[in-house]
Image 1 (cartoon, rainbow, N blue to C red):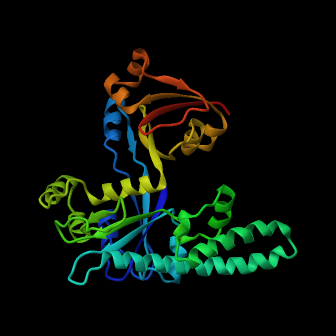
Image 2: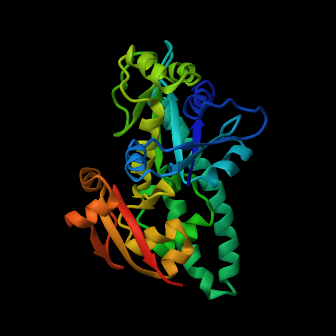
Image 3: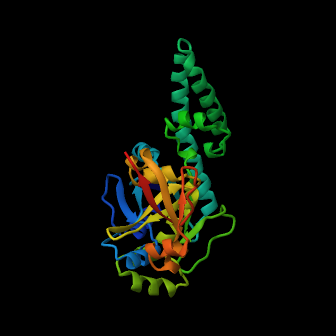
Length: 326
């Protein structure tokens, strides 16, 4: 499960967006967290086919900190996997591009303070412990980028560099999803980054308290075909480079997240560490092929089910059955 922090300047509507996405209110004075299901229509289809007793969706946790980028907020957001940047595009004084620039500047400053502190300590340690010289080099490069007001996400850091940097929880190293809080029925303003999402947080929060069918009708009246939750989570998966694979059977049908490019043993590990440790092979069938076949056993008989080994790269929508021994 991934954690997504909702970040915004005062009056941006970030807490309203939290309510819209999670269908839960906030508690003043402390961080608000809520876990939501990742929408996936495929689960109900497979559950019906296999007569599953239980259906389990993948999950995302949203985090909203009252007061925003205070010391408490920064500490909370350092623990998240991605940031949802909320900017206001309603009202006569709206300046979403300027607001986004201000947010970026605050994140850069927060990271600068953390990296400077870490660099001072690493320099002192490197005088007597040569193994800290690599850390000094990495932090110096990060400091140079931040001093030039550049987020660390665009830096040329290898996997070992990133391991060092992540120890400091830098906010500008996390993927960002930009949500533009617009008036009802308004489109995305021009000049926003690619993949930005336009959402009327007030409207989405208003319909969050009604059942899904009625909410869809109300949103459709404003020309909104897909709920904000669906669009935000899709953007989070895209930013985090995640895909979904599925398992199904009589006991349960379930969705699992895994990084794009993961091989079968890693996907098995997402289910349970024993499955990765004792991985033998995986039986694989694409979702569409399984639906066309009608049932798992039919997919075997039709020859659309494959047996794959440790080097198989899991694809979006794969339905897996892991064979293992420990």
